[in-house]
Image (cartoon, rainbow, N blue to C red; front, side, top):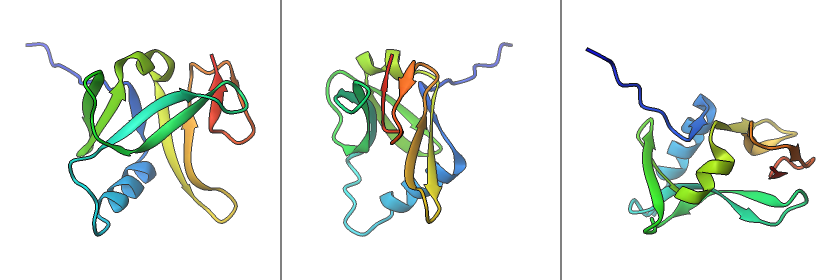
Length: 115
């Protein structure tokens, strides 16, 4: 019998999962929202990453990573497939970082890219 391995368009590191679950556990968090991972036009390199909690839309792909319900506009998968989201909690660099194998050029801030 063949084993099915579920694949996701993006991956989250252990530290990113921990921080996202911490945010989801905050008082007043709207549990109907999902973690949106995506892109939008703009930024110094042409496209900017989107990471935040939003309501699902009709054109979204739904997937769950380690109990975190995620959504992504189906058209964004082309730009983000294989990307890893990490959380840096240090004093010098604090926040989510994106490691995208599809990016041909990234900017110094690490939040925008081009393909």
